[in-house]
Length: 310
Image (cartoon, rainbow, N blue to C red; front, side):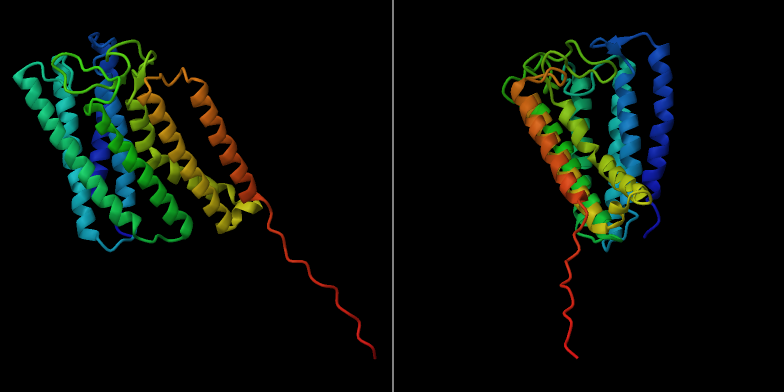
């Protein structure tokens, strides 16, 4: 195992410190944007980057052969992340939208710069993910937990690109080059804090759910390891490996379901019958597979010994 990636650790610490500042500003600064406190967006991004950077600092400490390449990929993540947060904060201080905004030459220049930072972030994430995925970790459970988490999170990050591709049903406001919502204009009624639309589809939901597989799946593996002290079935590596596979596939299925829901212009909190049916199948399948994985292993029956004549 290598030392944790120092630039990423420093970046995570800086984002955590900024999160506390922006949280205070949410209550101190009474300005709003799209019905939400002005500093909510910088707060969401700094919290997300705190988790993201800390997780990557750990991932890049795992044994791998591409040490120098991954160090530079991690450092690129830091530079791109710092650039994106700086631009978001600058626009928030001005009371302006940061993403998609082309209303003025300055807004357009900032959005172009953000596009560069986002592109660098996605490229560095992909490079680092490939090298970590192909490497075997200390055991099979760790190896596949990392692989599944990285695959789902990479697709989650990439799904953010749909916000600027004009998917069917998406409405771009005047002077904007993208939108979060599908089926309704941006800026309408939304969930508290996150602002996800409650009247239409919102592409931020699958983007959020997918990218945080990078944290949740390793946490699930750690939970299984902790529970193995109390439950005999979990002491077998084969059982924990199967449960990690089931969790990874179920999480990936949930991401695709939420993405499908958003693309149909459907709010997260108002699923239709088709969404609920698919969710039900996903849950029942995952629980059934988990029950099979936890079933005690049958020992082969021994044939009774035959008595031999004296």
